[in-house]
Image (cartoon, rainbow, N blue to C red; front, side, top):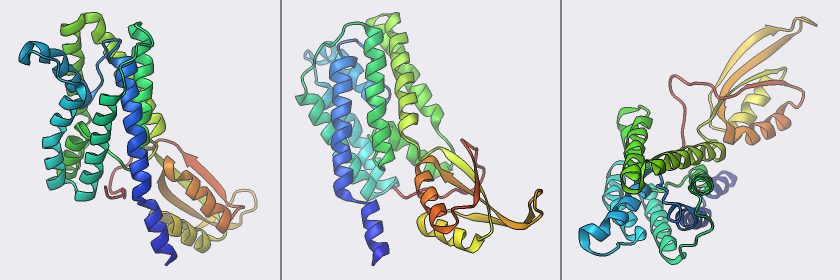
Length: 291
């Protein structure tokens, strides 16, 4: 019963809906307070939506709102997500994109500053917080996320190059439409957004943990109870000072899981020696939660 309650709390739909609202608000603030007034283009599908909105006057004779172009661009990606990724993931992505489009539409465009550097930095920071917060709570903002996840599930490879090429096209078009200086401002904004996203979203940061303990059974049991992680056990390790026999445990966790690891160690062996190496590279299988 306790395990069921814990699993339900981890996948709490109400929490995910709340996170979707927070992301939608932050994205609408970034776009309507900074990107649009500063002529700054965002990354991914949002940037493409800005381009189409800018060109819509010439193409169809009137300005199509960004909220509309953003939603229309995501519709074929919803279908791809439903077929290739998963239904629950798709449902929450649809909710997130719908809320984002809604808030972009109702939040008035407000000029806080016309300085493109200020707009690029603060717009990128606000957007980065929103994206990182959404990813940290298992949500996707749609767009390139769907393509990236689909290709990763199909090939098992990182597809960061897709984002790089797509965003390079975005900033190039920004230069053509507004002037080449805005290409650099948009690049700055995308860079800031990426760095802030990395700072907020910690699940992708792997950490190697080495534990030296005299109570390996308790430690292994407690860690595996709180975390779904494999553990390598090295028996008969000898300390150089007292020459006493201890056991070395090796495992990999994410930075997001670090607080759970600390709780597990306090419960099982608070006197154990724990060494943590940050940002390690993994070759081979590493469990990731289903989307």
